[in-house]
Amino acid sequence: MDEPKGTVLFTTIGCPYYGFDVFSLDLTSHREPRLTDGLSINFNAQFASVSASDEDDDEPEAVVFVSEWTGCPRVYLTRSGSSQPQPLLSAPGSLFHDRPVLRNRRLYFISAHEEPDKPFAGWSALYSPDLEGREIARLTPYGSVDYSPAVSRSGKFTAVASYGSRPWGGEFHALNTDIVVVVAESGCWLIWSGDSVIYFHRKADDGWWSIFRVEFEFPSDTDVSRLPLSPTWVTPPGIHCFTPAAMLGSNKIAIATRWRGKSYRHIEIFNAASESFVPITEPVNPNFHHYSPFVSPGSRYIEYHRFRGESIGGDSWVPNLEPVMSPIKGLWMMRLNGSFPSLSPDGQFVAFNHDLVSTASAGVKIIRSDGSRRWTLIKDRIAFYNSWSPTEKNVIYTSIGPIFGSPKTTVQIARIEFDLSSTDGDITCDVKVLTREDTRNNAFPSCSPDGKWLVFRSGRTGHKNLYIVDVVNGEFDSGICQLTDGSWIDTMPSWSPNDNLIAFFLNWHNPHVGRYDADLEYILRDADHLF
Image 1 (cartoon, one colour):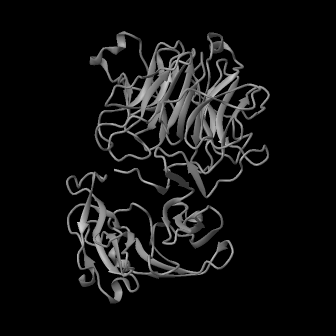
Image 2: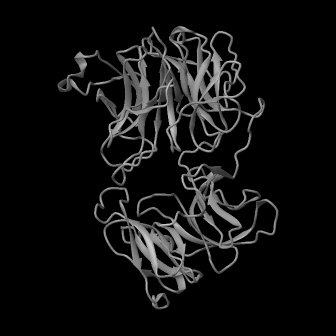
Image 3: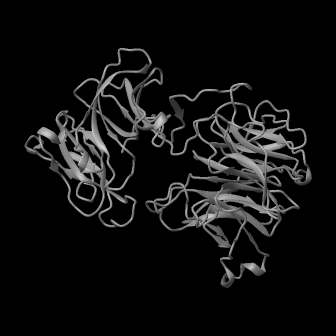
C-alpha cells in the first residue's frame, strides 16, 4: 500500500493554550528568573544531576525539561548562563517524550514509539539511555504501559505509575494506574523522598485531588503478600492538590493547589506536620496558573512552569494552526488551536470549536487554511463537531449543546449559513435548528456527498443510534429515517466520498462500557429512496 499524502488537521487533548516556560523562584530573595528560552512550549522540568556533586548543590547548574521546539515533545538540558538548550538523546522515531529525569549521568524518560501488539493498548513506556553511550534501554516490560517515572535520591530505585497490561478503560483525566512494584494502587506523578518514601497524587474518595504517601523498606517490603500498602492521605480534603515535590529532610512538600472559589492554580509549600500551607507563587504572579513544582536539594529554590507573559520576551501568541512533526514522509500534520476541525470543500477554510467547556470562548469559528484570518459564527454557546456542505457555499452543520452527555441531554443539530466577505471578527449568520427540542441528544452530523442528507447520532429512544434527515428542513417537514437500532452506542458517523458507505463508531459487543472498541461500515444503497 502506498503511503498516504496530504494534510491531516487534528486536535491534541489537553494541549496548553499558553506559552509555557520554566522559572526558578528563590525563596530567600523572591527573584524569579526564567530558565528556558521563551520559544515554543517548555514544561515538566527537573533539576539535572549531571555529576555526583549536583546531588547536594543547592544552586544546581542544569535543568532537564520537555520542549516542543522541533514540532514534537523532546528532552532538553539547559545550563546556567547558556542561551540555547542542549537536545539530549531521544528514542529513534519517537514523536512523544515526557517526564525526564537525569540522575548520575543517566537519563530516564517516557516515550511512545513502540507499537503495542493489540488495539486499545497504551504505547507509553519508560526508557533510559546512557549519556556516555548511544544505547537506549527499555525498562518497562513489553506488553505493559508505564508513566510518571521517579528516581530515588541514591539512584538505586525507580518508581513508575503503571497501567499494566490491561486495555485502555476510556479514562481521560484520571488514569487508573498503580505504582510499581505495586506498592500502592491508583497513583500518579510520583516523587521520592530519600529511598523509602514516595509521594503521589490521585483523586480521593471525596472527589478532590489529593497527595498521598507510602513508606516502605527494600527488600522487606517487596514481599508480595504485604502489597499493596495502604497509603497515608497527606493533604486535607476539599482542596485540589497536585504534583508533589519533596523537600528533603523535612515533612514539607511543594505542591500545586486549586482552592474552592479561586480561579488559578498556584504553588504552595505544605507542612504535613502542622497541616499548614505557605503560598509561594500567588504573591508573585497572582493571575497566572503554575504547574509541576520541583525543589533544589537544599530547598532554597522552587521551580515550575507557567505562562511566560508578555513582559519578558519570547513567543507571546498561540498560532491557529501549528505544524507538528509527522511520522510519514509526505503527510503534513497540522495541530489546531481548537477542536473538531473540518475543512471546507475547496480547502480554503477550516471550521472548528475553540472551547468545549467554557461558554465564554465556545461556539463555532472559521480560519483560513493557512492559519490567517479568523471569524466567529456562533459565540457564548457550546457547540461541537462540524460538517461542511459539499454543494452549498458557506453552509456548516454543527451540534449545539454539551458534549458527550447522556442520551437524555438536550443537544440539537443546527444548520449555519454565513458570509465571509467581512473582515476578521464576529459575523452575522443564520442558524436553523434541524431537530426537535424534545428528541434529546442529537450530535455529530455528517453531510452526504450530494449535499441532500445529513446523518447524525441521536439518543431519542434512550439509546444513541444513527438517523438521517433532509439538510434544509431537518425532521420538521421531511421526516426522519432511523438507520441503526440497538441498545448500544452508534456515534460519530462519516459519509464516504462515493456515497455508498457510512463509517461510524459503536460498542454493540460491550454496550455497558463507555468506550468504542470497533468501527463498522454500513452500506447505503439508493439513498434517494430513504423516505
